[in-house]
Length: 514
Image (cartoon, rainbow, N blue to C red; front, side):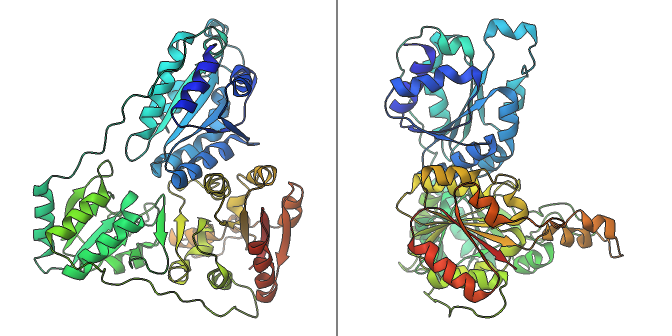
């Protein structure tokens, strides 16, 4: 058994049975090993950022890591934006990055790079296997590191000779430490704050935004009058009818300040205090009111769901939350197609337990209240702010949950970053409906130009934000990658096309002209 074979067997034995890959010469022994070692599903991505984004979406929905296989430093460089997003989402992931044979590095061949230095910018754990005998132990450690709560990005660098030389057999995965529980004194302290009767916000993050955590937070809200909130970007949120009501803090600063105004206390549950996405002149960076006291119930490395449940019991909270979302299906919209009408149509027809990968950017600003009353669903946000995540995350989510409909709500500008994900969806016959908001511009940048104080006419600057001359033809783009695609210019056309896509398995794309 060579190093590559021992690596694949160790991964499979550790429950890592999916690999999103874009391999090259230095990874050929890994590629050969997947035919000799049974149990590893390999999925080809035509760009490395698709591979890491898909592994991110897979981890968010499967609750376990996938692997990626990347080609040396440049391949990792292509992948790094979605590694950044994955790390911000606390997604468990194992990157296998090929490298030159150890004895070849001294010749400084064209692809030689300091891969470790690059990997450390977007990984929680990085190691290079120095020889074939070290590979299985290093692989087992990579799995263990990825699985540490709440999830980590682990990167293992595999020199070509460590891959092809003779190795030992697979190594068992080390025991994964359980998240540290919240001590009872902290629970009591949080209860005292809540019982003071002053305006208090429970700010949730991580697993606390899943159904169990939200339910416990809703019980606390009913017992104390606290408000439940979340930051704008989160790896996974479970929303929809029957789930506890909460608010997401808006992206623009003025409405965020308005939402947080008057809070005397904020209790963090696996979340960071809210800050502005960027620094804007004459606007605060710290969004919490100046006299609001910050308390920590638990960090993201602790078990937020158990902490909320313990706090609810400490407060002797009612079994039912303060409020849950009703199931409200809007009427199908008519007339001119707008972003809001796209969301209305989706809520009107969305199947149970759908998955939404949201990268609609400016087209999803008003979606929260509309989608909250849809059937129960999972919402996957762009977590690190690096665009090009939506299509790959939807791809990985569909691999993880083949029995659930996935909707990729995608802006046209962002979609161009990783459009190769459509080809992977077609090749793997994934049940993804991509709804492409075609406003034919980087509309958010028009808003940002105004936000930084440019209020005079600047046609040359604004030309940089237009996706025209020529127009992007997403029907042709998707069709060229094997995706059934259509274009909707009215609400009625969109309704008909969405209904067909929902009831027809496999990948579809609807270009919504808004």
